[in-house]
Length: 495
Image 1 (tube, rainbow, N blue to C red):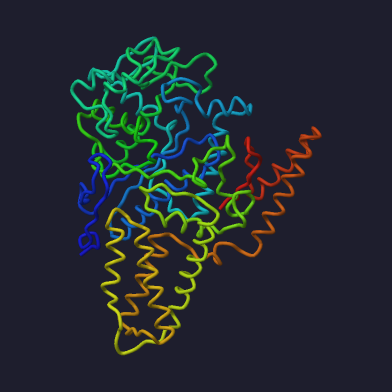
Image 2: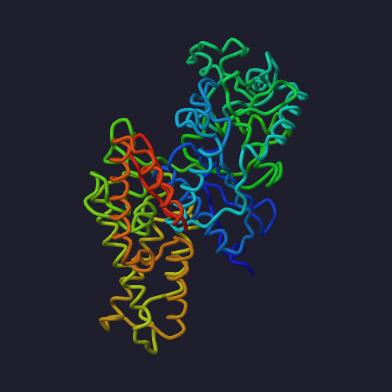
């Protein structure tokens, strides 16, 4: 019997607003789609927290014995600056400002995304499709929605007809918003005269002459709408009806709402059984924002090079800190919180090291099987990592009591106890002993690269662009990528 047949999971479903017993559509198999990043800038800590939530969900379902196909996309086209279908494509704008090709932007920040997630010990998804790699599928999807009467073409652009859709379906079923309220609260925007109604959203946009990224279609040379790519890619790899769709809380409306509408308009059925949303990360009680300086890059946690923290922290300490909050709760990122997490993390790792030095006895003074099931119960209750961690520390307490001869454990119970701790600490939570993930040369490397970054900045200030480019290029040759941004230059290393 597989573990998933023994353990009943309850998942909070954003669609129903309550916890529901999880039963996969096909027994033993799970299809999960998670909205990935738009790769036009360095991945930020809020992104990391969202993807970490789904990393432990992926890990736990794998541990239970499910064969899981985890699809997480890369948005490399079609994401405009404004959800009302106005403004530039975010990637094209970055390319224009830096005078490089859009795909250079995509490559740079996709590499950064992978490097950061690798550093945090994420498991890679089963499939990582890109929007630009699925233009044909998106065009075919638009054709179907047009044929079914839920979209209209005007001046080379195609829009989803939200009002017509809402007459036979429920636009707002996920976000619990009513179309009448949206109409009342929507202001007419300049340049939106093509739309029948402001609530309609783009399936295909005709490219203006200056728009860099464009593809031929039956309607115009243009590009797909942002919402469309996830509908096309999720159904291509997981089918018209799959188990789990996840993402950040900010995507619930309009992105995920539009996905549901597109699926129902094209396929005539709801696409997903469980919609899951990870909550936001704030910092020092306030929203993270580059404009106010209240933000921190993941690499700055590892180097300590940020005014909001007093020292550097290992990736596993930062991961442990984030997993001490439930994925549906707002998490406040603070220096004191990190310091406390570091103490807890070190205590946990010290206890794991002590496991092999425990003296075994003829009897056990605590019920190992009950404790083991409590660990499963925590994860079965909507992947409650904070409760799991509390139970692991109950195990730490038992380890220390056995060391002090105030508790006992038999040989059979010890094997169960040790296996359970290793499973949940390393396989499910994805933690690594800090000593194994940071070698003694890391701080020296960081200091050396920071010195080279300063020398490069001086060269640019002196208009010595040949030297500036040489520093950047030679660092890239040894696997160190410099990432220039408004906040300065950071670096990442290839795995």
